Amino acid sequence: MHEDSCWRIVIRYGIEDLPLFGYQPMPIVGGKAPKKPEKPKKKTERVLDNWLMRYGEYTIESESPEQFHLWTGLSIIASVVRRNVWLDQGTHTLYPNMYVILVGPPGRVRKSTSIRLGRHLLLDIENIHFGADSCTREELIKSMAKISVTATQAAMTIHSTELSSLIEPSGIKMIQFLTDIFDGDFKWRYSTKHQGKDVIHNPVLNILAATTPTWIADGLPADVVGHGFTSRVLFVYGADRRYLKPFPGPLNAELAKDLRLDLDHISRIEGTFKWGKGSKDCYAEIYREIDASTPQDYRVEGFHNRKDIYTLKVAMLLAIARSDELVMYPGDIKTAYAALSAIEESMHKTFSAVGKYDHAADTERLLAAIRESGEMTSEEIHQRFYAAGDVDQIGKMIMMLLSQGVVTRDPSTRKGTPTVYRSVPQSKADPELRGKSPLPQETQQDQG
Image (tube, rainbow, N blue to C red; front, side):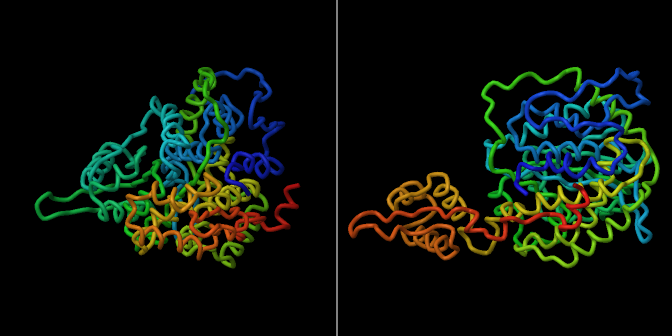
């Protein structure tokens, strides 16, 4: 499963056994979905057949990776459903809130654009409370507590185009709070000696933010990666734009209007989700599959161990994107699992510069430069990365890449000439990423 395949996942796995009544998947690039008969555009009635698919159509002019738009769309739905829908899991109640972080090199993949396209649709929806994209932990606690005084739930959405703006003002204290509040216990208390007590009733927090692998390495303590906070976050990595559009077309204003109408409608749906026919057996199979597997990178283990929980959260969002009936079908479960597996495959790149090695971030940038150029001489490396350290330090960075097998030294380099270093094709350097499927073989066959 490639990084740009998330939209195709929804089409491939989300059609066969779902009651979409004649729905035809929209082409990924170009074209428009078949026009459906006009429906009365009332706030209490759906306008679109599938909100998430139509959001894909709405964002078609954007260069951002497909997976950015898919997870932005899911995050937007989570923001409007809040605690209004849930799944009774016996020992606990599961709400479909999410922390989604778009990760990629600065500027290149249009992370901020992805967030703004989704946020724009939320602005006129009633009872959607936005938190500041930069604030202290205490300010966030007070904001959520204030909401719960007048509302039945302390529902808040935070959109931050720079994750650092949200985390850095309070550092580890903010990370601890975000970890603690994620599961949405019915009452959360905070008291201090001098500032009194704040109580958050029925909290539910959704976060959609963006950052770079370098900030993950520099801004997050290494010992929190793979545990607690990061295990609750969906890090969606993208390295390249899906295509180049120097002159993107205008957004479809009529479709934007319909998307808003349906978000308003979805925001009014309330109740508990039920298991559709065969969905419990499907989930049990996936549950065992997750338990029996181990990710290649230890820094992804925390997410992997919570993948079963996120499968249910995403399945609820996929179901409510197309229907009011609050029933999860096997296709919802499989689609959610496949989409999560797709981002898990590249999640290790989010943490590529994380570690005790002081120059991990510089080494990662060096590898990216060699891969972009195909090859670099030792002179070019020293000229470009002089700020990373002295000759010995840069030599250690090169040796690290050689020992990892991600670059090679040209054996034909003549004595007295600069050494040439070439990148190793990623399919060879990362063999575990080749040919892996997020679904068991029999599950794929079931889906045709």
